[in-house]
Structure formats: structure tokens, C-alpha cells
Image (cartoon, rainbow, N blue to C red; front, top):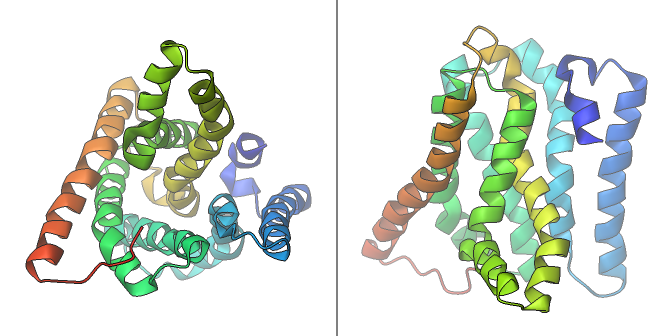
Length: 235
């Protein structure tokens, strides 16, 4: 459904049918969150999938008309704040301290935004490329490379690991796929003049999105530790 909606991103906002589907997805996930709260379960992370659609629906036209940032700056600033803001839902789920949590993950999302800005500033990736690369990246690194470890356990005959992968990997794939696809949906006009990305830039993007954010995050956390910042309670 997401691919159908966004294979021609310029038509999403002018098509009543596509706008209706967007709102249906957003409201469905918001409904899951509300239902979870009514039965006493914190499940704000359901909105991880919905919030990029909010941005597209509400911000696309404004971005096109106002152009608040120049193209090179926009390619960094917009992904950074979209992704960083997404951490709010994780904080709400775990009822953690908001400021320390945001500060702790700032380095990780700055690294993602750097990779996004560098590669999208040089090549024109398709939505499907970015969504697929983002999804594979998430399945690889989520929870400290949990899914590769579960895959090895499943190969060794652990049925529980297999079903964990089966029911969780798709959700993680969609979340991380939207990490890269959502900023593109707001900014794709800025990269139309770039040469189209083939297989090699796509492979390089995947390698960079795995390594660079972790490196930047490591340096950032070293600085926080050196400054003596208290990160107690951060998940």
C-alpha cells in the first residue's frame, strides 16, 4: 500500500483517494495506540509508522511553497529533526526521561542525517531504493544486531527465535524503511537534477548507513561521558 501511495509522490496530495488512504493508515495506527492505552498498555511506538505520513500529508505543500532551507542544509536539517522527534514515542512508551533520552540519541540521528545528506546530495535514489535500504539496515542493527543473532539461533533449531523474526522483522523493516523514505518524500524535488543512483551507490549507502551513525554516536557518547552527563534511566 505504501509503495502504491508513493510511487508517484507528486500526486499524493492532489489525489483525494490517496489522501484518504494516507489518513486511513494514520488513523489506524493512532487507534492502535489509543486502544493500547485504554487497556493499560503503553504503545506509542505504533506511531513510528504513522508519523512520517503525517509529515508528508501536512508538510509537503508547505515545504514546496516556502522552501525554508537551502537544498544542502535541508537535506541534513529535515531528516535530522524528523528522526530525532520520532524518539519521543519511544520515550513515551518507556516513560523515560525525555531530555537525557533525546541528548543520548542525538549523535545517532546526526549520523543518519549526515549519510542522508551526503548520498542524496550526489545521487537521485528512488523511493523504493531508500525504503528497501532503510528496512534492511533496521533489520540488521535493531536492538544491537538482535535479528542476525536470532537468525543464527533459528538455523540451530530454535523455533522461538524463528517466530520472533517472523512477527517482528516486518515491523522493524517498515519503521527503518520510513526513516529514509519519509525525508525523501518531503525533499525529492531537491535531488531531481542529480544522476540516478545505480547498484553501486545503493550498496555504498547501505554500508554507510550501518557504520557512520554508530561511529558518530560513539564519539558523541564519549563526549557526554567526558562532560559527566547523567544518563540514568535512558533506554
